[in-house]
Image 1 (tube, one colour):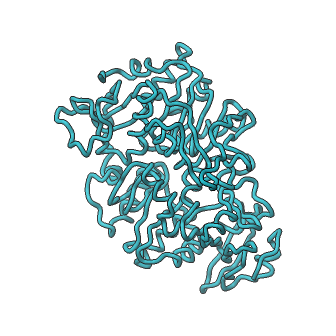
Image 2 (image 1 turned 180 degrees about the horizontal axis):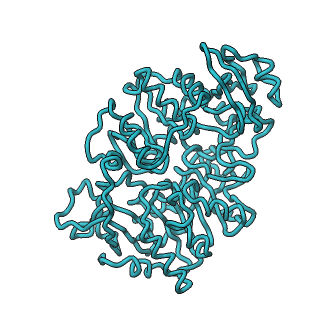
Image 3 (image 1 turned 45 degrees about the vertical axis):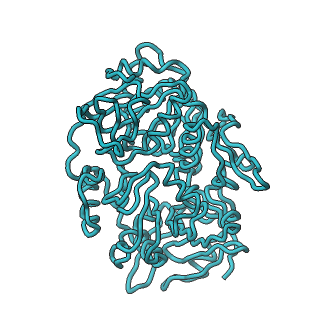
Amino acid sequence: MFKIMSPEEAVGLIQDGSCICVNSFLGIENPVELHEAIYDSYSKTGSPKNLTMISSAGFGLWDENKNAERYIREGAVDKLICGHFGAMPSTKKLVLEDRFESYNLPLGCISHAIRAQAGGIPGALSKVGLDIFVDPRIEGPGINNISKDDNLVKLVEVDGEEFLYYKLPKIDIALIKGTAADRRGNISFDDMYMSGDALSICQAAKANGGKVIVQVDKLVRKPTRPRNAIIPGCLVDAIVVVEQEPLGSGYEALTGSFEIPSGQWEMWVEIIERLSSSHRQNSAIADIIGRRANQELKEGDIVNIGVGIPESVSRYAKETGILNKITLTVESGGVGGFPASGPVFGAMIGAASVYDMANQFDLYNNGGLDICFMGALEVDKQGNVNAHRSENAFAGIGGFANITAKTKVVVFCLSFTAKGLFVEEQDDKIKILQEGSIPKFVDKVSSISFSAKRALQNKQRVLYITERCVFELTDKGLKLSEVYPGIDKERDILSKLPFTVNE
């Protein structure tokens, strides 16, 4: 039977050595006051300590002094397992300093492993991850020198086929953020951007004899409609009520509180960007790439568009009128709206449907997407892509591996070089005014996020669209398929590649 508790009382349920699973998506839907209470308890008493933290999409507020950042930095956490670390700036640095064990698994594979645990199954099988960094034959999921746990990802064979088997530690504590609890303890998510893995996390914790702690904005007397109760009260141990400041219409637009016609999507994008101090980078490079990539869209396509340069695709899709004829999706579970970006990435403007994250990754893993547009840090001569870590920086794979694993057409949107590249477009011709100092096309990527070998086996069409040319993946490696007007093929492309390409 659930009890209404203060944040301090609720985190008192967390014992030393607990495995905590957080239902968040980067910077959204974090149970902030629960994280703050954990920090207060640890700083005063040294407990809870020796924690293991799990989150499919990562958790944080893009601020090193908020949410879980402080108690992670102070030493309360021994092991961290996440799909993405982008919203945790100080934690990302500590990972690379070997301060604690840290593991990076594909977002969707963590989500499915949580769902498996909820059903009493130790782990989940997936073909996602084969032949990329997480594959034990390549690197494995450990990020730093002290992360040696080989139980998280194993190569197995079933009926003569290779799979990766993803197995998480047993979840003891569920940390959840919801909208409201009714008098029976049922939790609704009406004003939330997503429900994520919430139900599966709670079921897993209870299956393991653990505790479910839910932070809500309010208590309501009238029970919610049964279909709206994401978490039934019988699974809840502690409810913490923290009244939230009104979000305002900009953020309410992301919760589905009112209908937003597709013709108003761009207006709401601008409103949300102003509120979050997140502004699009309107550069010639992104414009050129987005315009060319947009040409790959077809009416009726089910689509995922990544952050960064790929976001420019959606602008041109709107200009050309095809935006209303395709279905956009986002990893957190939104379908049929317009994905938000910046601090509220994971939310969706005007979504037609928002379901559990594990269901979204069922769609992605089984090839349900027609096309996706992703960014890239490096591309090598075989067509492999590194999109999750650079020499001194690390963000994590996120949903990238799941999205690109079986999608029929995969389009990588990237500049030819980085750091200092300056491009001008006049009279439909491209001119490279200053070359970047960091090459994006390399002989061998430093870590594999996308396997060209696996893509060829799956018969996927793969394009690499830059501001000066387009490459296509073939069984002989990269093929230079297009050179834009104004670009000198030898001077601006071939002479700057560390390998030869087919033409």
